[in-house]
Length: 411
Image (cartoon, rainbow, N blue to C red):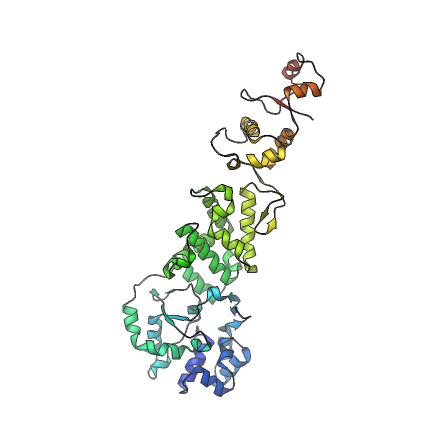
């Protein structure tokens, strides 16, 4: 019995037990002095024992270990798989792959089929080699569910029928990515994010892109999650800039209420960001947080995704009016005359945005603004003399226009 290059250790233990006429992998491992659960959990000492008993090079076995990190998480080649990334009570397989396994054996062909490690990933739903949907079957949630030989045996007579009854479809780019990452970690930006978090980022983002901001996740079918995963991957595969460009598109689409801010703009994606407690989500939050700071009128005193905003980048008429101390409509008139904002009166005050930095001096002047009458009093000037001072340029309004009353800086 030879260990296959992409075979999981429990699968190899299961086939070895069957090769030795044991009724199950659990019985075989018990007889050999270690529990089958140890192989499922990736315990190194038990794997080395299995390698010694089968005269197998231990390194390929160790390379294919799913090592339990805690009650919920397994690690495979540096990738952490939480329950969200794995299947539970379900086993999936490609019937064409198993047929090829059996065709390579001359005798006892029922021992040939083995479980590929990529089949453990929930979002991997299509065989990238045969362009076939993976077939799913229920298995016990206990360790016996990892006894691949025992679980697959009833399906072996039907492999040809399963293959013929499947509609061919190419694996998505996302499914290719899942396989590639489990084989060898790449150097894309998404590869810097934890494996489970990368999967969920693609799926949640893709659900918004494919089915709308508030699509009900619990109602998604497997194929809809497959579509969503690939749609999200097409965005994030190009890095943070592409993610921010997608967020910008969401902010300009119809069907949103800007009074609700980012929650309305980003829908379920923003709810996912706020509700997820996995620390692997922090790099994603950092990108979204900075995008909101760069594109929405938030500033000191506001909190985004659990962190306070330290510096304002964007003002709205509404936020600037509170800082400057002018009525929003008055401020809007002056800013429109100065060319800072459009003269179009239709958008609401909180919809009219402008950058703070190039307009900081103007806003500072407006915060000290005086009317013409107050300016005359301030410099103790006669009413008839003040227009002459203005004409000669000794006194200049902050903003000048035919449709507004002139105002002056105290400084």
